[in-house]
Length: 64
Image 1: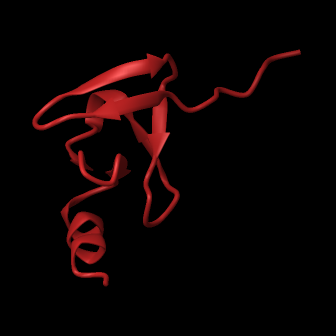
Image 2 (image 1 turned 180 degrees about the horizontal axis):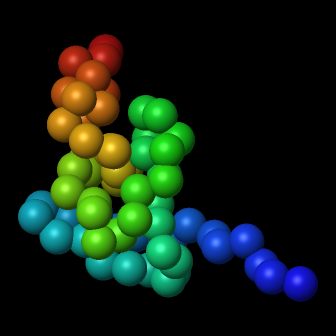
Image 3 (image 1 turned 90 degrees about the horizontal axis):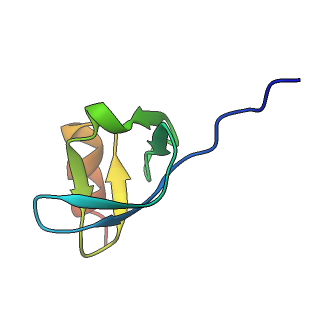
C-alpha cells in the first residue's frame, strides 16, 4: 500500500520560507492547486499562505 503524499507545513518569511513539516508540496490559498516546493515563488508572510503564481497572489492582495 502506498501512502498519498501530504503537503508540507511552512513558515513564510520575507523572501524565504522555513519548512516546519516536510512534504513535497504546499497548496495554493486561492486555487487549492498543489505547488511543488522547488517551484514555490509567491507567498504572503503577513497572511502565512502560498500562491500558485502572480495572478493568484494579486487576486488575494486586492481582496478586502
